[in-house]
Length: 525
Image 1: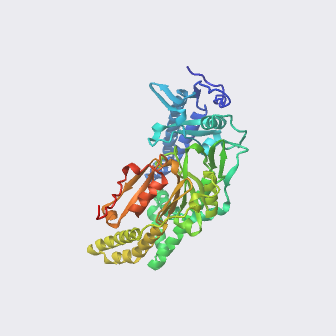
Image 2 (image 1 turned 90 degrees about the vertical axis):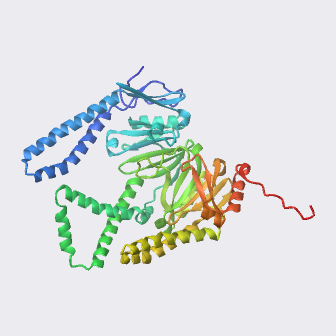
Image 3 (image 1 turned 135 degrees about the vertical axis):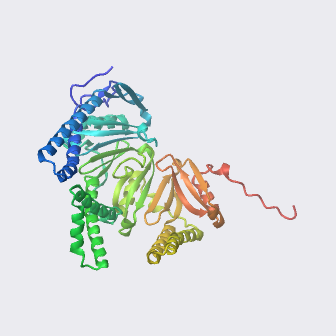
């Protein structure tokens, strides 16, 4: 049986009583959204096609006629297909399950237990915001891709907000304050952290800056190629810069790339973190952010297993860090998102990062800040230095054998100091400790990561030792948990110290696998 609401938003599940088990439709504006998306893609594709066809000397009216026909066919087909999907797609929320079905020709029913729902994320790009709808992704946290999540796209933003509250809190939602261009938000939710525009200074020192700079050059050449002007652009640039020395030319290209990268990284920060607000509400953490694409990400506190304070190399030089959450139920790392959903705080002053991490854990002071870390053996440093030398000497040797001695010299002069510096930094960053109810591990070269993991959340230990580690008396411990990566390593720790640490952190967990030390016998016996 199915029931169709008379208007969008009227079919929202009730959150103040028993779940409404009626099948509900998606928002009826779905075909219009699909038509607009198809129109934009068609017009965008028409630009290079138009340029290429005009180069062949075809009459303008023929080119425009072909584009117009293609536009009508593509847009009409997209709207028709989406209407079929909308007309035959229904969802419902029962006491025990969340179900999504498609019933037309091929019937499909997808269902997940309500007690396995871990996240309900609301996303609205500029087009969805224009239509007043959002995309809802209901995740179970399993590492199985699309089979472990339900996507309701689109829903009216008020309806989506009620659905989120119903699935995550199962109580009446707090009074809402609905913005005209985004999902509703609890008006009384206390803010754990809010955006400070001074944090934007950390954006240019991220690894995205050189990537965006290189991408800018590639974009210019691609657009020029669409209009058949790539050779002209390259020729004009070469003619303009031909009198510059090689080093000056390289310096100019590098400077322009850095400027473009800085501008791009600033723009990316604004897009991702505009309106950022981290709140704690009804046993959940919620992050709202985004300029063009608005995102509302929710996490149940019961899924929390710890925090990770990440200090990328550039941010670390400015005494800044970001905060990631260690929790069950977050999307897999392979999901196509422009930023990681586990990040609850962008790069901010280190004191702010520790304060936010402490608030997330419900502690007076963050374990990543208060713990006294144990140093690792000198053999761990030696291993890193040897690997750093091997990573530069071997490529240099291969280049020399190939007769490319100048390049081999460059690799040695530039690569060896950098590799050795990163190796020493990696050793200095190693550490592990126990504070209160948390196991803390620190590691990383360049980008330093400090993880505070709840001891109650450690469900096992993985002990590995390579032949080289065994010769040095080292092992690598990995605290196994059901959250996120699945394991958090304590790298190159002394064998005896590591096993004692594991037993101290979670008493009894490793005991059955340890060999007792035989008692020494006296000569008299």
